[in-house]
Length: 479
Image (cartoon, rainbow, N blue to C red):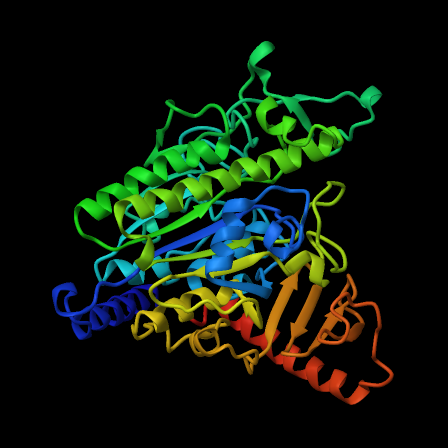
């Protein structure tokens, strides 16, 4: 069955290539960058109203594009959301139910695979978290010698090149175990808050590596700010593509501001009047923001910024017990209430999408793939399998706020079904449901089961049907 599917997928990709004019016969396709932060809350950026955290570069780019007020990560944790970005499908369809669970199956057709067929250079940088990166040594959360159970590196999923870690790293000196606060200073040790890097102590490995090729570890230029370490690899990738007059696609997945948080005195000093925990969180976010600004300035210097499409978002809401902010929304990471899945986001493409700030369109990370293919006027090779994302091209271009289809969420036993206006959400064990009007009550403070009993039953039926579809996919029926 796998061989049959693989052949049909290859034929579909070849049809795209054959039916698409050569670059010399058509307008130059846009470069595409998908930037994602880790655990950045909806309220942790200036363009969503934060007045303390300095994010001038993100704010400037968001102001040039479309701020996506109602943008959802596909899950309330990291790995599943990342799978949705590359496939346009809910991660429950492919066995990625939670963080450190499953891996990106080779049978999935990914966005970089499709874009390679029409001439794009493809590169992944930063966090991966869609499988292990080695079969030779112990690495990060799941890499073990002689274990290929979840081995899935970027180059087997459509990327020409990569520089990434399997999972989290410290946000400063990413390969070094941080020095932690002690409880006498009143700081939380629960998640590993870090005061400074271990440069004045005995240096211990954090237990993870940056990988740049098959069983190839990067040992150079891996100290200091982690966002800068990542960006130092992105810029040469861009340079090489531009030198070849080749459009490029890249996923740039920062670890910031995932714990453990570490940053330098320079960035802590920017928030000297705040608590040390806020200095660490806010400082790491500002350091990351500088690297996004550095990237865009580099694109401008190369003369390609105008035709570069940059998408920005977070993979889920802010971590529990941190100063991160979900804004006005309820709960945080790991929750399917709005604060766990509604994340900061924008898209900017100066040549292709007119500024229209902000947009209240409900959009998900699963919408990336179909929307990008539509913007590029490419036919999707995925018509024979269920996609959970839809193209929102017309809404972005015309300012529409209705997507017309619901967005489903699953994490452990929790599930949710979000329409243009209403939200059905289960309790933690999935046994009972609540319903909210997100347009009138985005903070989910007024439960409406009594007044919306009929609608609630209708949405429960739609959700059950969708969950059954995901289960069939997870059983391999799509392949």
